[in-house]
Length: 244
Length: 382
Image (cartoon, rainbow over all chains, first blue to last red; front, side):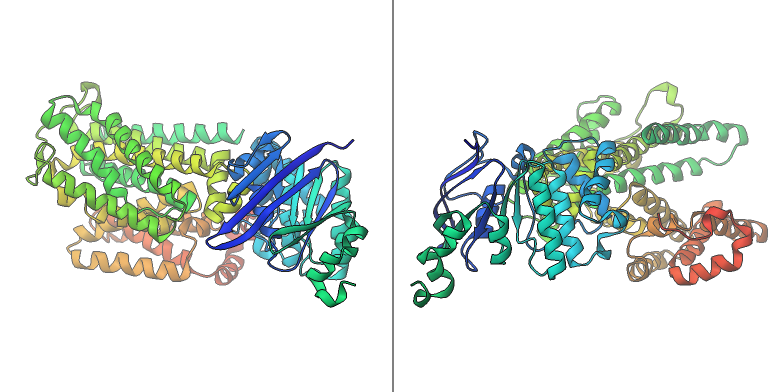
């Protein structure tokens, strides 16, 4: 029996008159890689933001390891063990690469002192292949390195649950292979992962389970192959004609 | 380790500066040096307080005058209305200013919209509102001003100027030490993260609301504390003088010129700007004073955006050499009537040197390299 780590019960999120998420219920089990897919504007990033606490759900309930986190501030949620990356990398621009990682190491779930955080930062940079840039200003990094810095920062909080928001968008095939290997390694360390991704091939091969969102609703959940054959999913992506 | 080292440095600087009044009695140099240094301490404390909040966390405040005013009027009330020793007003002024900061912070930081220019405008509004309240409240001021008269301090602090010097020194040292400690602590790292991207900082676990409240309160405390002492120096307190825009604009100017990224930046900025304004306003070219300071700001924003500190740390020995040479040349040539103005001109020369681009500086270092210690040669950027 797998342990349920995070449950989203009937999550609804409105932005003014627009309903971005409608009654979404998803559960994440410990140790899995949950693929979160759906066409543009289907609410994937919104769901990530709600789980991370950046947006507050209009209705519904979030439970993480038995604790209700619906109304918690983002920093509390991070300290409890949920970390996220941003679709567009948002490094701290006046800091060096290693200082960027130090921030998450001291303030995250890891909760290390500055001296220890400094040492640990190098480890995280080693893991993501950025060790050579440790003392460089972030301006020196290209897009793919910035994406990896996002990952290094999120990992350094020592998360139990990692939310990856399109870490591979904009990367070339070699870099994508690198990221896939890295994500597998993270999973092997015992981190549970929710991954939002547009590249179907990658996400179906990585995920142990998938959830498909369309217009803010969860229209399918299950094994990747099974989900991809679901008529409703095919309709959402390709139109009704392809469903049969 | 680093902390222990730095604290010792502060103690050393403190002891050296504390011995100045004693040196004065030995060598008999004029009292105006003590007064001059008191004002340097005042500006160092004010600029460092501003920088703790606005430089570190990026919340640009125009409200220094409000918190300063609280400190000043606390002393005015304590001395003029309650007839108590002004020493009581120092901590009380600081605490009242911190409480006002906490109150404003609670409202402003809860509404997450108030960032950037809106925060700056709001803090400026606090200054205006407070000025209006004080002007119209007969018990506090009522628009006539408050005259403090002869203020007595504890006897062991000596005569008035010595007392002001020592108290000013303690406050400035304390402020800078706190600023320094925050800079090196986890707290500081969190504030820098807030400055760069608050949402991401919060997402990585930085308790942004609590940190902003805390730094706002600490910053206001020192502004108020320093203001409470400054009231004694001013003597005759008027609403127009206290809540004017001169103070907020100068602390911003000092911190920007000195460099907002580092605790030492605002200290350097305060020392330099005050020395320059003091010199030019006394050199009977008063009208040029603001022109010079203004032009300096323009030039520095164009060519030295990160502030003096960022350049200075890579060119420390070279800059010190230039400062000393410029000073010695003036003294030997008998140029200028006072040491302070000679210092001001030497500072200007050094700043001109700091304005040189890294490229030109690199060439200069190469041609002078046989003079310098090895470490400085590469103009390394650590």
